[in-house]
Length: 283
Image (cartoon, rainbow, N blue to C red):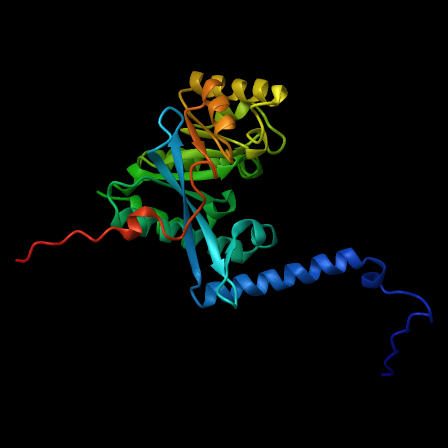
């Protein structure tokens, strides 16, 4: 059998990658990101950074915290999720990160019984066996961890598989797990989500919070979300609040809780990490 030689491109012509240098750069970056995350998972270089969510009326004391996934790169730099999540979200690595985030969050709740914590998840993880097993083992039986666990699902993720999400929420609410609708308003928003899903919290997308003190359009939209949340007996949370002026405006618009750099950046060294563990009585 005679193999045909691949035709070389004509002299002076360009390959697809050469014609699209931006596409090539993006693909190369994504490959590097996947390799970094894969290495972090393999070497267990994964952690949570904790950011406080405060009451809009009393911003000095956190109501609860959000645990945000972080990985370490080869130089031990802490890499935030925004720098890698887009590349891994729809892959097996994304599901593995969901497992690690949940596992780390549950360990933190177990060690600190006065803490309430929210953890991000993807709707795709509901059917992922290892993730579901971690959750069910932790909140099943006589466990009370579910009372202090909040699972955050983005609006886009809810719309991906709405029936599966609805059934999952109903099942987990029987274990006292709470749910937050994350990034509300970031995509194709629908008011039907308030009626069709039993969310306990709704988090307004941070794009509405920035400079809301002077943005009348965002004030109208944000106040509508806060009012609807109140009518449906949900706690409203405004995210990415970065100034006292915006915080005061959001409080006046009716938001229950606030989250953002104005009250604390995500940190891998939260306040309770500095506390000495309680002594156990000797038998």
